[in-house]
Image (cartoon, rainbow, N blue to C red; front, side, top):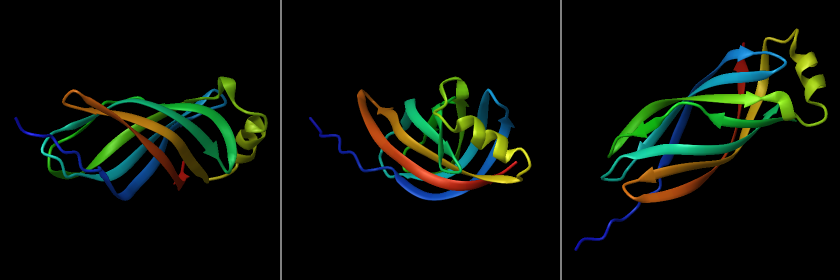
Length: 135
């Protein structure tokens, strides 16, 4: 019987961030993230619980909308589609949206947890990054 070992997935670089849609109801962002999976098995992102901040103001909850599969022993750019709903935006969220109406970029922070699975195992990862995005 062999033992399965897990090596941490490595964040290599943020390749790009692009606002796909933006309104008073929500935000959709595509993030290009270069990741290295040093394991001998594929890893799939299965769930997320993220908080989104725009220019330092909390805007509400966000989720990864697309399925991300990291091939075994790979280093690839993965495109994450993040969708945020402002229905439950924190106080100050509307003022942050109004302030951006004339702007061409914003500071986007995504913080929270991402759940992934490999074989029969599941693991939760902490995520916290900030990126300036144009729209």
